[in-house]
Length: 471
Ligand code: SAH
Ligand code: SF4
Ligand code: F3S
Image 1 (spheres, rainbow, N blue to C red):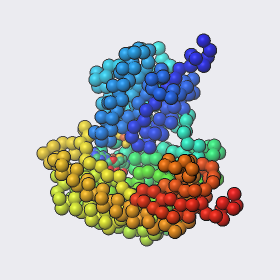
Image 2 (spheres, rainbow, N blue to C red):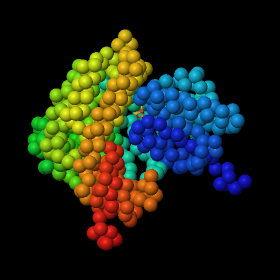
Image 3 (tube, helix red, strand yellow):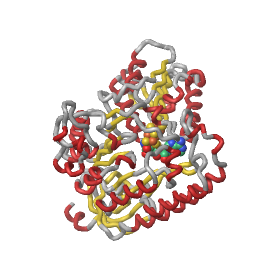
Image 4 (cartoon, protein in one colour):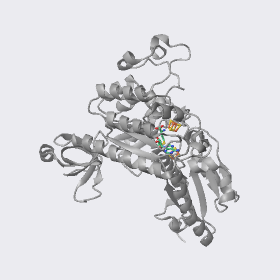
């Protein structure tokens, strides 16, 4: 048999958020460095991996259905190794081996490197790895997209939103060293990356746990609290800030766009907004998760801001960045949510007029505070009816907001062919709006596009004549 035929093959199925997508890129990079090759479908793989999510019940059930398929494959080919990583694995830990005895290895989000240990050991018994160990920065990454990349700037979350499972699956907040991140961004830029998305559960809390003796960049001085000013630097130095990270990443040659997700409204401060206003590489989009419009519900959710503070933040953002897109996450049917409280969510949706929103029905998660509020759970039809009203309102505003682009010429970063019409190109504006357009160019290039039409989700247009002539 040739070496190619004996080479082991892997298949990874990813659920959940961009952090999981990025962890999967690292799993793939690590597996390829161990000599594994990718398999198109799980049926052809020797190693079948699932990178799981547990944010809502629907995420759990989608994954469990996939596990049934893995079980059948294992019965047919007992040599296959089945591995389960990510947040769901972390939330059930060793219980996974009792419930699903055909699983060989399970590991939490911070334990990708342990997968390599397992695969290179002689151990045949099921193994679980669930410690929190920080970010495995040394692992290679296999990116699917040539010119866009994720950079995980912090792991974990120190907040205690009462509905959320993430603090228990991703552990305590910890920022990666500033210089290590910049080295990573420089290497990505040298590799052709033009757009960076900084990732963290509470991304703008970045740097609070780091210390430096470097002075804060001059442009940020007007916004610095006393503790961050260089004059007050003690022996231990000052904390790093998210705003200075944005500035430093923007200064890396080759990086044209910077996005980040997700910020917490309490930490979107003037310095970050000033960077959005003044630094062209930092995109004109902020995802600002609202969750609920009623201050009473926000309190029960332990969100640490109230309705007015949220609206004040939006006003501050709009004042400095009038054209910026603001999107959000909203949960309906939190335990005990009254009709009046729900209507306050609609009020905030009307007051802000979001460019877009992800809307979720409350889902009780094991081990969370809100899962204990059983007596106040709302009947399913009430939640569904509220969701319908909310979605209708959200879409109305998204349509209106998108329409403002018609007639304008916007820079569009080309991502590839349009998904609906292959004769067209597809790209994104700085506002994170998808544009399908006629024109010429390669993925990764930025071209001016005249916007001719809009739906609530996407824009359509034509590449500007002037630039077509230049090509
Ligand atoms: N760290 C991010 C959120 C990550 S989870 C932040 O704080 O913004 C993404 C979204 O899932 C949340 O914003 C919330 O709207 C939703 N979500 C989280 N837990 C949920 C639950 N138990 N039920 C319904 N939606 C939930
Ligand atoms: Fe969950 Fe809240 Fe942390 Fe976001 S900020 S990950 S919603 S606990
Ligand atoms: Fe899901 Fe974990 Fe992300 S629960 S949303 S994969 S942080």
